[in-house]
Length: 516
Image (cartoon, rainbow, N blue to C red; front, top):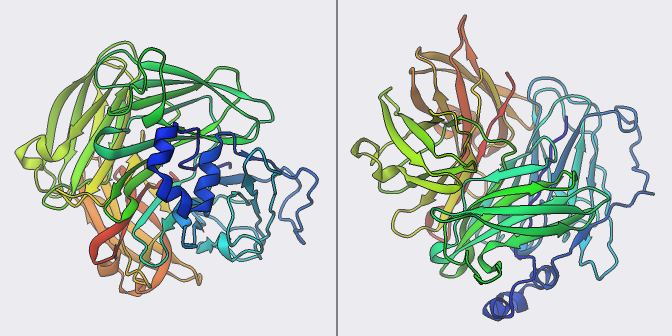
């Protein structure tokens, strides 16, 4: 098993006018100033370091890996807010020891300073465990990558939140399985104050030559080549990218992205998108890993419209043929609504679901998006809130397959922030499903409930209400469809908390990990 994350922000060579516009931010935040000063910040591993693992669970280089890049203290940790990597055993026991390797990253013009830390043996069979990098030696203020090794499967999420006093912002992501040569993003915009970043990690010892193809709603795609230094992280601030003869042609545009390596050096790519809110830099925003393959069918479990949420389905067509698309909307009571769309070749397409049909104006909804003429597409879903004055958002790519068993690494109810966690299910089958939800707590205990999920519907598990034992506790979850012919499910989770007098000022979302 190998899973990776890559996320960094506000790095890169911004133009002088952009730097001046951000002078207040830069002068207040030293780490941001360092990141913005040079696009060639690198991670350099200490190859001579011997990890002090007293009782390794497996031979060197033989165990499966979970690699998490970028749960760090930079701009979003200006007040020392902790970032957490949450690991929950999905189906089987965890080994008696596990190891987290953190690599400190500095400007290329300065000497890189690796950091290596060992977590004590903690995880037990079928339980949640949380690694808090800030609590480890020499990690109170650091930029780093993390590697979690195990001799049994794990499900791993990364959560980042910022501003320790109020906690007004956060995002989360589930690990990806490996580097790849091609990455796709459907979501992206620089319109109306959005800041859009592509975040690229080259884990190789050779440079990676990368071509980025920017897909707009209309017009020909824009292309640009980039070189990623060995073992480096690089950011592309899309708003300020220059194109010969066109200038900053993406300064105010919706954008999908296709990122391709041209010299066989696989990389990891994520995307961050933020909107400043009065008094809160990057107060609203979301982050997601890229997608490594286009497909003709996509499933989105989460979705809500109405007076609070604005819901968007984002579709990218990276091919040379128009895609004829059907969106099938699954409502909570089992009502199904199908609407057709055409997504032009080499373009980015947006469905504002609230406005798509009167039946979708105020409802919870899951969505299936199919390309009915066989043209592969990319699909993501974004939710922004509150309607009329966005101050937070979350995003997730769709799933390309359904399943009967899913795992979620993160969950919490209450605590200092008053968190609420919702498990979102789409039953895509034509029969009702009997679904068992098992919560796994940090102390090794668990709790189970059974739910009936109507055929072809969207279903919500409010963990605070359905599991009173979650009060002031963290947990992971396993969701399993039972019966002789189990219903096919797609599972996501959403978490929210209040801050600065605002309802759900912070929120995160992640697609579950399919186990079966």
